Image (cartoon, rainbow, N blue to C red; front, side, top):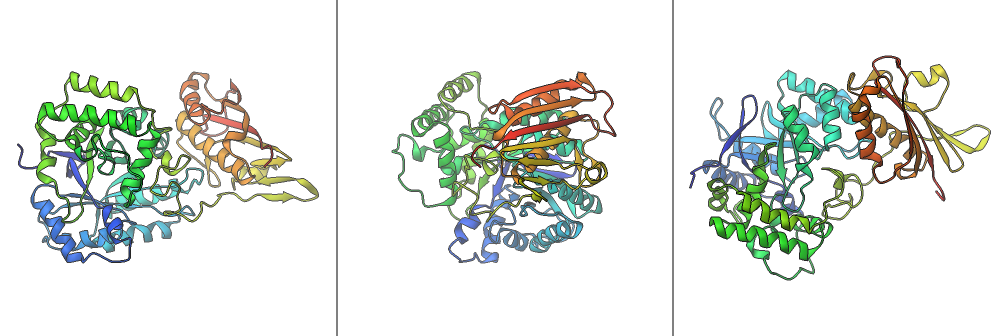
Length: 489
């Protein structure tokens, strides 16, 4: 058996363990108000580091995890090889000015006690609020300044990862849910990452402990005491329920017996064998339930074709988790610990404000703030009774910046987010859209535009027209207008 976990280069100069220690359970331990002693916590982390599990993942909302890790890092002298610390910044939606972003990043630096964050990962709650691009451009500047080593994302779907890359952001990684139960990341996201050189960091690989021998053949639990396991029980329910889950677990157990390893090893091995995956994140409970020796067995075997067929047959009985990676935080069904976002956010603000049309009681309108709207005398969208009409919309960010120039698919994603925000401000949703019209600069680019449109509307299926319009003004590749009917709203 290997003495240490395998390693991989996540970014230039950043070597990590392929088994990453996740510190989300610090928040679970501290949720009753008590705080872990940072030196005792650092002792536990140092034991992991000495065993080769020297890569730690945390976030701004994982209790005192950053502070504990900061105490660990201070034990290493300047210039010595120290553990690797990943963290995340998950701000509430709102304007992402230079000062707001710098304060968020500097808080991570202070809590970790470092001059540079090894990997800073960014999470955004709703893509209808476009300030996420402002935040990433500010973080890109701080990376170039030397305050961020590598820049990552967390819970981004393929479309918005592609949009960030097309808009000039240097992304090293994207951290997403990926397991035998939740296989969304194996599709478009993995394909994009392999094409663009972005690595996936997989969390939820053991489904909060459900992917282990402990649950094999057991009755479905009536209550679940901890946040992590309650979250992954929702994934199991959505994937087809307890019987389907037991089928996947039984297949993994059969493979485990064949190779002389644990079910958890099989679950981790299956994810690690995807080429886009750099590492899996396994929870560290700081002295409790440590399984370092067992985890190392992940690197003693590979899945053969018989193993993959056995798992594939079990997967066939399951229901795919809906949507793309990260959708569990942005749209129903909310597969979070509470089944909604109440333990993360009080509310998600609208980026646009609807105003009444003077003298017309049945009309409301919104503006997106571009320079063209007042210049040409039009609104981004107007509501008349139950109808919402959205003007031809381009990938204009703020007053006048063209997003992702030259990339029609990425521009379409941005445009449809903008349309969704406009409709939401007027009391509707994308489910209310009954017609879209798409105008292309180049008809040869129909496919990436159509695929982006399909990601939004594959179940809504509005009437649609797509035509080549010739030269659009500026660097825009596509323009889209929409109409929605909001009956009873």
